[in-house]
Length: 446
Image: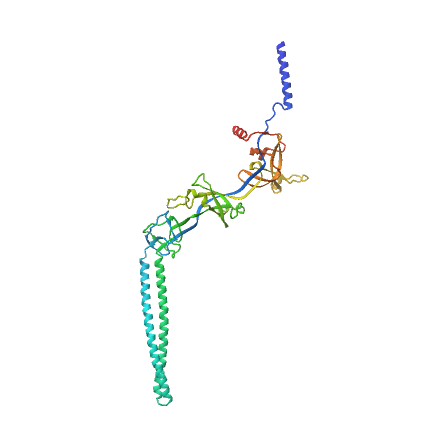
């Protein structure tokens, strides 16, 4: 063996021994520490919200139908027109009802003449009765003096009784005629009211948001079933967003809560609202297996939040149309408190297991009933993380309130979420990096 070869073997041996020593000491082959980002636990303003979607609807929305059936002969308005209370909206052909009114008036006049005739007959009966009464009194005096025969006195009595009955009959005829006149008068009023129903006037100020018929069409009156819906008038000066809030969130919503509203037709703009009504009955959607229970909440759109969008020269000044889709973020709670990022909070299961009891095959199925789920955060301290139990309160989209477990100022691990929720353990060694570097590293590994 040459001298050169001997030196090479010695160098290789020393290198192998050195590598073994360095590996044993952990200098070589040391695994890379997990990288984490941190954020301080400190006081922040937290606004808890309940998000829900729905439609814009006017507070006052009136559906107009005709009470009488017939052909529409006048329709002076168009969809989108602004109308005032009492303004003519449409007219149904009045021919048949007009003839009915004329008949009722003629019958009333006939009955009025009958009343006059009955009154005259009554006056005549009164005169006849007065004459027969006077004859009766004279006859009775003469009969008492034995001057008048019994037959003549009986004739005077019969005439008196007959005229008295005739007077009462005439009086009852007058009463009956007056009742008949009142009945005819009521018929005239009824015919007049029915005739007036052919002219349909607006019951409120508003906008014709929907027009369902055209001039010349026939409509069915509300006397027969539901009737034909002619149009809808909406008061767009007062608008609500009717949203469906899930049963899990409804108890957090109260009357007077403020809300931020986004309307799909106005991207990038936010409007303000106030909860004015909370439904008491549930709206159940879906089948028995997948039922969802919601409650309708009405959020009033505040006019000052969309004042700049009002169209001054337009027929309809309101920028909104009934039925537009909208999303509301109802602010149910607000506080300034110690908080951490939402993703910093994780849970761990503390299983109540009796160590003296041998584990059976069905322990896994029973464990869920004994689990106590607790919330934790990981606090960064000098290259290590410490698992700290916390209790939490309200939260917004970014931060969650910490009620106990932290004092404030601690550096709490805020990412990556996969490490927080699964892999990190108490006293693990970690490398603190900037959040932007962490996400870049994560992206490069994908």
